[in-house]
Length: 148
Image (cartoon, rainbow, N blue to C red; front, top):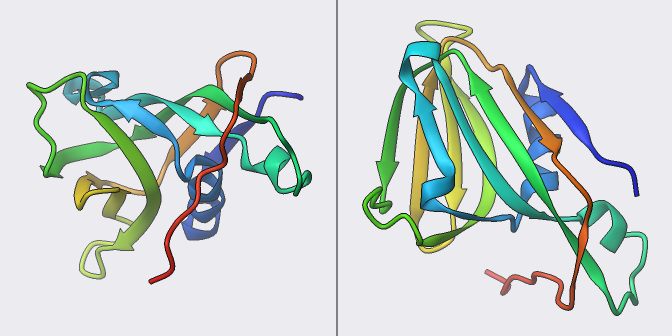
């Protein structure tokens, strides 16, 4: 399987990136805000949804190490995440963009994690990207979510 690289410059782009990163796993220590460079970056073990959806009865699924960067970040706010607990594993549910109607194209990129955890990135504009960093590895289970 080929590696994936995507850019997000608007809501539609970010929705596609979010779909590819859904159910990705990362540790708190694998995130950083480079304040001087106005960049927030992290690596995540993403579930390879594009392969799983083509193979409904697959016995073996895949994950890939993927790098994500968000540019033009002015501030970072977290809820329920303790930076001192670097080994804590987070499960990413979604990314979305909230436009600041008073200052377009500024807004907030919201990273929502399981267990009511969240990161809010205040940005000058939506400019982000993701890139697979290496080969896939097998995983025996496919993420699932309870209804409601």
